[in-house]
Amino acid sequence: MFQTSVLVSGSKGNAVLVRTGEVAVLLDAGVSAKTIFSALDCLRVSRHEIKAVLVSHEHSDHTRGVGALARMLKIPLYINQDTYAQCAHRVGNLPGPVNFFETGSSFEIGDLRIHPFSSSHDAADSCNFTFQRLDEPERKLGVAMDLGFPTALSVNKLRHCTTLILESNHDERMLMEGPYEWSLKQRIKSITGHLSNLQAVGVVSQVMHHGLENLILAHLSETNNLPQLALETMQNYLRTIRSDIQLLVASQHGHTPLLNV
Image 1: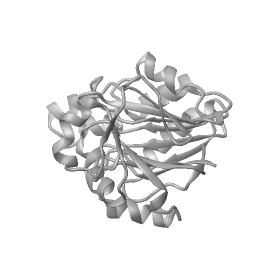
Image 2 (image 1 turned 90 degrees about the vertical axis):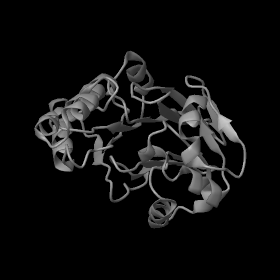
Image 3 (image 1 turned 135 degrees about the horizontal axis):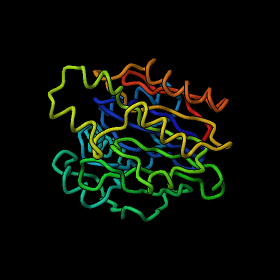
């Protein structure tokens, strides 16, 4: 078994479940523990399966519930040192030691091999991740959210994924004509901001291969995007290459199904 679900995703909070028959971990917890437990219950995943919580970067929509979750489940935290220095005050006291990983170096939790790699985002040491089961390395999950620009490194790491969770944050026209202040618009559009729907298409066009079975669009802005617009933008590209990939859009208000990676 090798499964994933985006428990919640958007500008107000993010959390991703990665699960094997041996271990389950959460990538980020930017919402309350109650919200995460409710999603797990709906998916019929026992909270006691969760053995660790990983953090991608320090922003509150990825770390808001990390401390409470670690304390309630008595599970370890995996984070890089620069990120922890920025959010330790929010995480609070933990039941056990903090496990520091080094960006660019793989580590293992149970039968999961986890590889954190740098993402282009305005945070201390922001990471995206790939996940593989040790006994089935040909199945690969990529999670790439909060990246303002798809670097050559990012594209290379996301190749050969069988399931990809990818940011599709904003529609460029909605952003520029929307209510945000100019400085915030410029931050979102910058190379350390967020991917637009069209930029997400650009990433997929570079990593698409016959083995990519599931694509989940994530981290949509409630102000500067619409789920249907993100979906249609990606569908239009997929039609041009006649792809039958399963395409889903993650929500701020509900979880995706459990997908086989």
